Image (tube, rainbow, N blue to C red; front, side):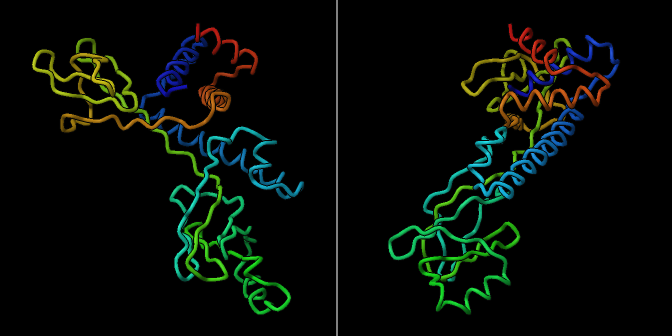
Length: 261
């Protein structure tokens, strides 16, 4: 579900229920960011509970809980430098299992605290770290592995949701706002002023203006929600509740389905 569709649904339901409240595109973006972060936190807490109580891996817990699958990412052949350091992806939030390549074999890594790592390093007689490597995560920025050597690492992780952003321009012929899809741009037209075009060069709307008065051509800054539609409907419900509109889940799903026809 695109932000354009979500925004129109909010407007539709607000009008239908006579709430008298409207969201500007700027406020809509702020609300989306808040609701996405809150939903992510709720779902992750449920997943952590399953991981801890049922001794499940991140991927196993996600398969049981659901809802957060779009944020599971896989990284293969990540470089570990000569001192055993792996730099994590910028969108990293939580790890599943790291597999470190040692002596041509990828071995699962036990993630431990710095204190536990020091104890294990002094007890290498009873535990070979070449067969049972360990890793310490530093502030979600990097992992320090032991044994410390240049190597490769495969791992999956939970990423943070992209920060949504609703970009739009104004149709100067009727002074209405026009959603700017991902990949669209405002370009100069000798006949009709500045036109909004899609990624393939097709005209979406003639004679438009962006309120920020950017240099032309201007590329859309829209960032869509990465959630599945079932979770976006939850976000929609929460937005409507904050607007003073309370809908039952069945009613909401029926209205969304009706709107699709």
